[in-house]
Image 1: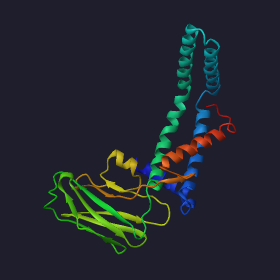
Image 2: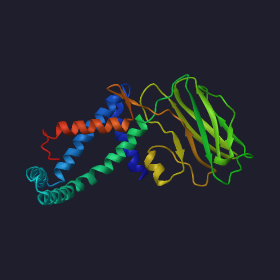
Image 3: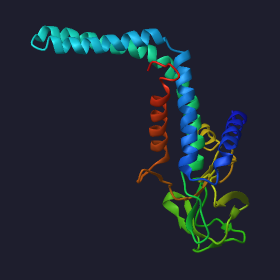
Image 4: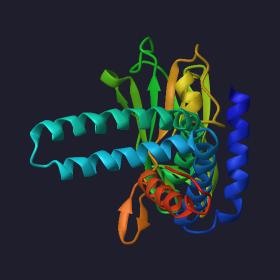
Length: 274
């Protein structure tokens, strides 16, 4: 499973490599276009297009029947029943290709989150860094330390929050680079990269134990061994918003809008009945 996710990460990185220095909207638009084409082709080849076209005509026909018999309550109820029946039959033809489409699109969304979910850190920025410890760790007595390389500086002493089994620091970024944070909890050492870049790349806010969810959500990121006293290490990168026509939106909303727009534009040239 890890091998497959790593290969997906490599492919997406190669696709987006030429756009790494451009505004994020460009890369999102490229992926949205590819997603729309992929979804339309799957829909076209794994659905009964003739039956879908027929069901759509029947649905509109039943709505027209409601209009024609608008003065006859019994006829309106019968036509509404036919509308619902036709819709359920339409969905029966639509759902199979959608089930095929949804898995690769979800995996793609994970890759997009890594690249467009957070802002890059830059010199002059400050960020919170936190360490989550296992319940059995005596957080007030344990030797807990954070070391940073040149280019970063620690602004605050460690804040130990016993009720949350968490230790927090404030870090200042002084120069660009892929910096390595080194956490020490008694005899256990954990390293995590802090990215300060001027271009788009993968950002991993959290390093966690190797659960199924963490492997899916953070493809390409190392995991923490199960026997470690550390549960997770997190860097609070700021959440990115994408500027679309003056609106500052989450990348997923922009991706959905563009994918739907491309789908509507391309459905006729690709001869797809939706």
